[in-house]
Image (cartoon, rainbow, N blue to C red):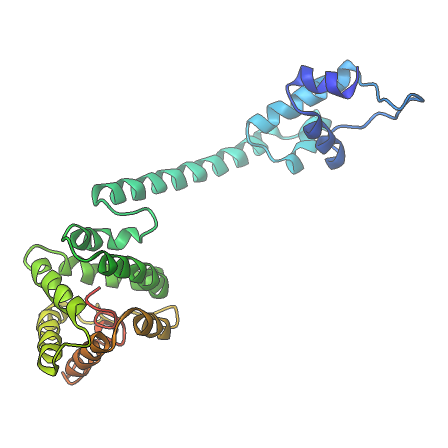
Length: 268
């Protein structure tokens, strides 16, 4: 039989058949004078065996012993395959759990799930779209810079910030900060900074020792660069003023001051 007939009988493409030849799984018969290759039923049986192993998820590079050695330890190969599949199932279940978490909070799939509750509160607050986009982009950057360990501490702080007794004040301060512009007075900038500090200080006080010390895994100057690009002069002045106010307070955890990053880029 010719290659197209063999491929059709086995339910594979001719390209797949050629790939099996290249990997050495299926011997390629010599060409006849007419330029064609003739396959036998033995080639079909081997090709069907290859397909069966592939359907179980056995990689091509692990197939030769199972195909060529009748005494090969099939049990060991199946044990390895089962362990790999179990790991894949665990990963898929973890992905589904993240998806369920994001759906429960109405969060977009490209956002850090650990910050989803906080972001959901701000998303539903009818804030300016530019502000919502800013907070979304920033959360992606924060999560990346915090790393796996730092993100837990950051999420704990944000979880408190999004609770019903705190969130309305945070939203209002965020709105006031978003409204700062070239026509804003020094008094308005200072009042907004003071309101931000008044919001953050009690939350920082609630943290247990060491809880606010986030060990950042990425360069924090990127937060400053992002803020410089996204915020206007008055908004940046407000944050810098709030930062100084917080730093003047003895014992303030460095990880949650504006320099690292709570007030660095607005409230979020």
